[in-house]
Image (cartoon, rainbow, N blue to C red):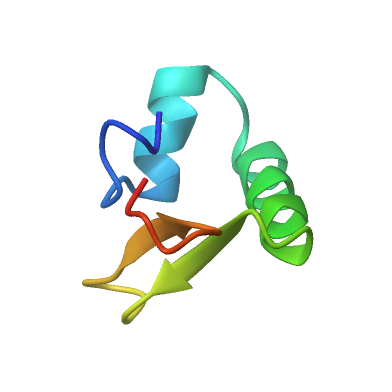
Length: 56
């Protein structure tokens, strides 16, 4: 999902996955803590990046 669109919002992730906001937020937090995903830029205009620095 994030590989196709690094600018996807939590609301967009909810719509595509069918999961609730807490579930999506928890999954993102786990991926960030594991070092697999990071948020680059601001909350409003930033994007998600994979651990290696490649945009996801």
